[in-house]
Image 1 (cartoon, rainbow, N blue to C red):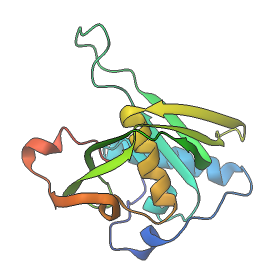
Image 2: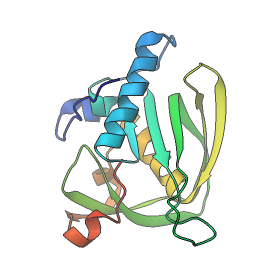
Image 3: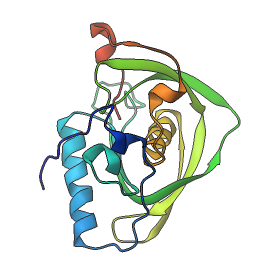
Image 4: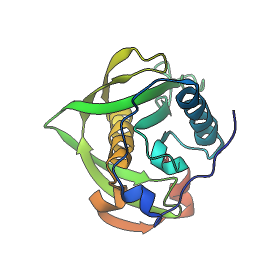
Length: 175
């Protein structure tokens, strides 16, 4: 595994629609592994193929809720998703607005309205179909990453974009 360079805005690869993955081979599995390592090193909660200069429909997401349900201060349990050709097949009518940032647009954040819950269909790293129902921040991260695959950035959807303040830096997960 290796850490890849994260492409920064305004690189035009971030504005192009990514190509579907045709074959699950060693190269795609290596790309997914590298993306996980890159995301964790950044640190971030999600990363899409175009963000590492690969215009392919692959994303990685790793997220856990802020505190455990017991409230005893143990670190949150994170779940890792490595998805190929993901698509959002359902989105709730109910929406939520929250602050987002992006590893490809450092230093900026914005309030983005997104569906409160989504269903994502994709292939896992073994090429098997998976269906994920997500709500809250996890749903937001999936929508952010699938947007990347379609050449859409959070700044396109944000009500207001602003420079990140020090106090916001720790509270805003970056994808």
